[in-house]
Length: 317
Ligand SMILES: [Zn+2]
Ligand SMILES: [Zn+2]
Image (cartoon, protein in one colour):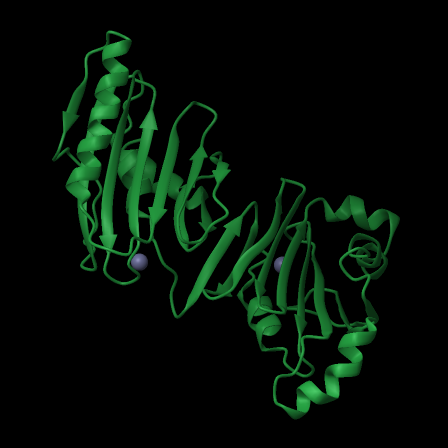
């Protein structure tokens, strides 16, 4: 168990997780175990090898929200589960919360319980974005974790800043405007991909690990031609060397091969609704992090804003 200054020291090694507008920080051996794919409401769970977990449920209710009723329901569910297993059950409405920061935009209620395991949690309604958040750190009954649990809960945020959400998992961190929706994702230690959509436009961020191994067989450009073949198949692209933030990189750009979008393109430009018939991608090799990053955008001609601001938001090392 970590307490006080040991915990503060160790927090340097914490990692940020960002998903659907929710962000939080956890020690680096914690990993995502469940991730909801809907923005309006969903559930995520992050856990560590010793059986500790953080669960976050979010929703965006239309009407009024009765946090007390939700808590009372949760308490009942837990009490019933404990009774079935003939365990004592203890619930606290105002538990000791060793680490606690003021949050003027949220009306928070903390709760704590002990039964089949134990938990420290919090529910709130955010006046900023209208989300209701229910979060708790749960642990086996044998592990005393109030400081760790409270520290993790204190890092939890339910909306991004300046109209952008931070998406962060497995060493890939990218900021995306809140109006873009998660379209596809693939999350593995060796490869992480997040793809977002806004109408016809796409934004895709990818990160490959073990770049030194990958680049033994092929140069960066050939690696990308190979890995992105499927995603790029409808575009006729040209590559040019383009350093990024001091790293060797490649820029790919080109137009769709599909006939219909090409035919209607002049008309759509004329009515000022240009179609997203271009693909541009910026990729680079970060030797320090031993990773390869690629960001792609499907966009109207000349409009690289989404791509460039996403690229700017990525910190590779
Ligand atoms: Zn909020
Ligand atoms: Zn780097």
